[in-house]
Image (cartoon, rainbow, N blue to C red):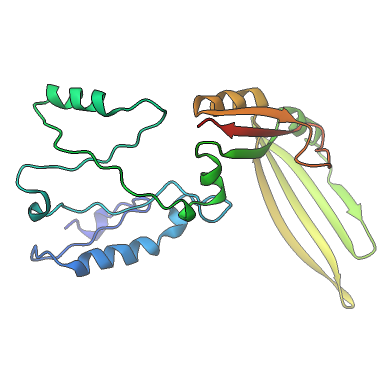
Length: 229
C-alpha cells in the first residue's frame, strides 16, 4: 500500500479487494455500492440519465469458461459485420474465436440524449455562435426592471470562445427584496463545425430558425439532426 503522503486523486475510480485474496460475492456487492455513490462523476447529461458509462472490472473465474479462455466486449458501429475482420486479426495473434454472442439490450434504461443518438433518433440543440457573443460583450451591466423584480446581467469575455454571464435577480418578498446570483459559462460554437462533427458520428443535421414558433435571438443557432440507421 502507498503511504498517505503519496496519495494521488483519480477521477471516479474505486478499488475493493480482500486482503487475504479470498473471492467473495460481497466484494462485488461492495463495488456496486461504491459505483452508485459516484454517480456525479459519470459525466451525467442534463437529462439525468445519459452518461459516459460506468461499470466494474473483475477477474473472470476459470470455472466459467475454462483455462486459457478470455472474453472480449466489442462495440461495433455501422451496418458492416465486424466479425470477419476481428477473427482475421485474432489469427495473426495465434488466437481462435470460439463463439460470438450478442448480449440483450434494455433501451428503457437510456436517457433522452442517448436514445436520440441511436439509429433513427432525432437530436435537437441550440448553439451560441461568436456573433451572439460579440453582440453581448458589453462593459456596462444590462438592467431590466419590473414591478416585482429586477434582473442585472453582466457579460465578460475572459478568453476566446468563452462568454461568461453573471446574472443577479432581485424579487419582491413581502416588505423587502430577495436576491439570487448565478453564473452561466458559455462556449461559442459555429454551426458548420457542429454539423461536421455530428456527420462524423452518423448524424445529419440542418439549421432551423427555431425549435417551435418562437424565433431565437440573433446569433443563436438551432440544429435538428437525425441519426442514420
